[in-house]
Image (tube, rainbow, N blue to C red; front, side, top):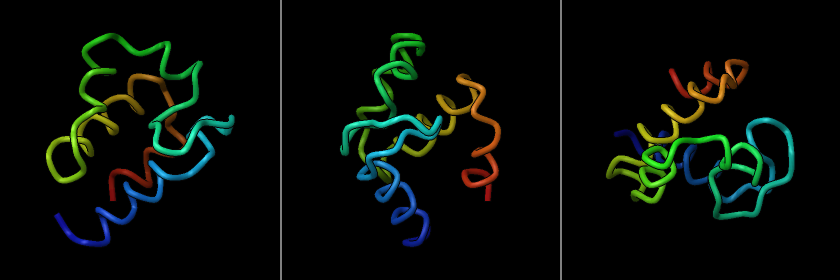
Length: 76
């Protein structure tokens, strides 16, 4: 994984805006509502560290939630 990729995921994790546009707590992957829609397995996967599976878990969750307008950011 490139350093720039890690920085992207770190910035997303530390931001206070969910990918849906709502407020989220910094350090959380999603807002309360988006996180609540995820299956338990996906929620658990989001606790992996960056560089150790978090990126794939976030990408899968974004796709599951249908946040397609931001998928382009993750697929590059």
